[in-house]
Amino acid sequence: MKSPQFQPITVAGPVGRLETLLLDSAREEGPRGIALVAHPNPTQGGTNTNKVVQTLAKVFSRKGYVAFCPNLRGVGQSEGEHDFGSAEVDDMAAVLAHAQAAYPGLPVILAGFSFGTFVQSQLRERLGDGPIARMVLVGPATAKWNFPTVPADTLVVHGEEDEVAPLAAVFDWARPQGLPVVVVPGTGHFFHGKLTTLADIVNRNLE
Image 1 (cartoon, rainbow, N blue to C red):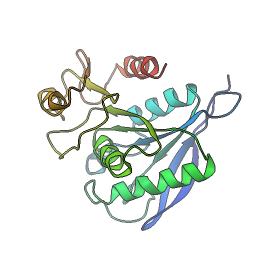
Image 2 (cartoon, rainbow, N blue to C red):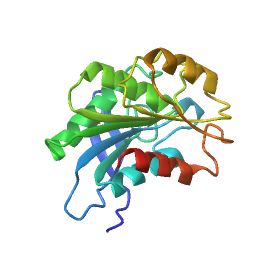
Image 3 (tube, rainbow, N blue to C red):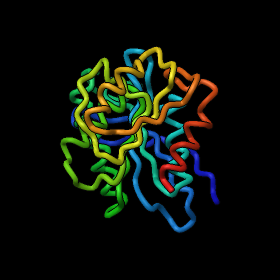
């Protein structure tokens, strides 16, 4: 199995270019799907080089997905101004359109970490059933943003000791939906020392 490296590309967004990292599928016979991974809150330094974002992208690549990790508006070299999770949905929709043009007909996974889970949840709501096969939400900050409901097969992974997005608030959001939450014991928001555990959880869930 090949080991692809992150490649910088530029995607045309609604208000200008979106600096994006592309990680090709590690599958010899080519990609089986597309994965879009959204970064954490840029007001707290979140970008597409975040370790959780890149851990997710590598899992998807090994599973045969081509992963797109954009910097949303106002982050890094991406044009526009940060819009607190509203217009960023338009950015992610543009990345999805770019990915689908490059890899037509493939199923799509929407994934995100922290702020990125809010963006992806809104995009999934906008698209309806559409092309989205799965969702993977890590550390959703449901106490900070007004999350929509998500599909019943969404994978939600959260740290037991999350100091940014309290676990109790995640359960308050998940409970009315009957949505399971995978809790990683003894870890905080950024999964320090637990990235391998996170990768294993996502990997098993995709099998």
